Every structure is written in structure tokens, then in C-alpha cells.
Amino acid sequence: MKYLLFFLFLPVLLYAAPVTLQNATATLSQPSYTIDKSIDGVIDAYGWAINAINTNQAAVWETVSNVNASTIQFTMHQMHPYHLIGRFLFSVTSDARSTFADGLINNGDVSATWSALINPTITVPSGMGYTILADKSILISGTVPTTGVYYVEYSLPIANITGIRLDVLTDPSLPYNGPGMPSNGNIVLSELVVDANGTFAVPEPASFLLLAFFIIFRYLYKK
Ligand SMILES: [Ca+2]
Ligand SMILES: [Ca+2]
Image 1: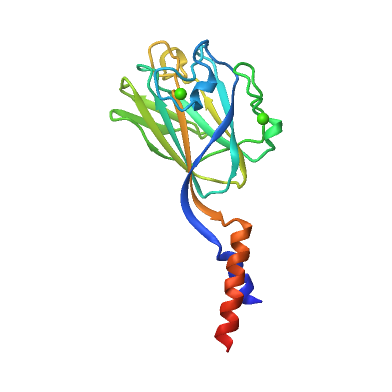
Image 2 (image 1 turned 90 degrees about the horizontal axis):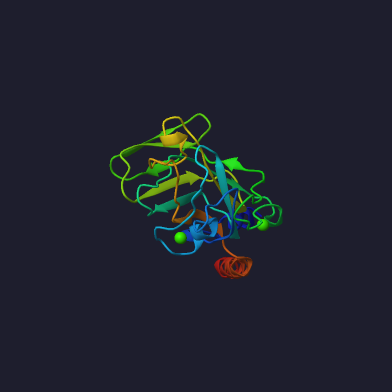
């Protein structure tokens, strides 16, 4: 029996995998800069923008497949001149996909049981810095480059992730309170790319195959 228990922990592999997103949904999108452009595979000067500065806004996406990983990495491409995000927060959920992310670009359903991600590893463009605030959000500071990429990595607190949420938040340190870094306080998220690393269970057929080999090996070894 102890061998069987050992086996249960055996069929686990370590690898990195892209996380595909769908049903981009936002509380607000600026015309021509709608939330769907955040995951259209195009990294250009368009993307998700908001035409109401000095307001908190949120975007959510469904994962196409449940994510079971130890870490998740967000690559935030921002290609519209100087329109980098000033303050933001990432969260994840394992709620049923039917209960959030209705695909609307304005007044979309962003309500779910969200777990805010904590203790990020962050890389921002040269000349920029960041501060982690009490609400777990990340506040960016420093010289705003023309274009830039933020890399943000977190450990995942829950399994079977079905959705990701990005809050863009106001802060008095930002122009017009933000949530963006340009002089008008807006943002443009050109593309959000997500990857996950860690332990993934081998699909069941492979487990059965490994179990068969294990039983055969045990049989031969005893002979
Ligand atoms: Ca895009
Ligand atoms: Ca949905």
C-alpha cells in the first residue's frame, strides 16, 4: 500500500505553459481601445484604455483551461506612448466561468470570488520603481518611458484558476490621480500575456500507463 501512495505523488511534471485567456470583460473601455484588444495577439499602440481618468476600473478574463500551477507570470505590454499603468492589482478566481466575465467591454460582469495575489516579483522598465501598498496593489513611480513592459510573477494561492482580474487604481501620486502615468492619467494595456509554472498532474491515461509499468516492474523484481 505504501508503494501505491508513493505512486500517487509520482506522476507530476514540472513545466512552463502559456495561459490562454478568453471573454475579455471590462467595467469601462475607451472607444477604439476596448478590452478585447488586450488579448488579440497584437502588440501595438492600441489596447485597453479608459476614458474616465481619476476612477478605479477593472478588467477580467477567463482562462480557457483550469490553471493548476505554483506560479503565474503576467507580461504587461504597454506600447501607446507614455500611457503606462500607474497602480494595479492582480487577482485570481476558481469560480465557474458562467458566473463572471460576460464579455462586455463596458459595464461588464467582473464580480467573482477574487483572491488578490501577494508578494510579487516585479521587473519594470529602467528608470521606474514600484511600491507595494497595504491593499496589495503595486504603485509604479519614476521616469515614464515611451513604451514599456512590466513583468509580474506571483505564487498562486488557489488551484483550478478559471479567471484573472486586473484592477487599475487611482493614486494621488499619479497625474490627475491616474490610474495611468501619462500627463492625462489614462492607461493603455496593449497586450496581457500570461504563463504558469509548476506542478501539473499528468492526465489520467498517462497515470494508468505508469501504474501498469509500476505493477509489472514490481512483479519482475519479486521474481
Ligand atoms: Ca493587443
Ligand atoms: Ca463567463
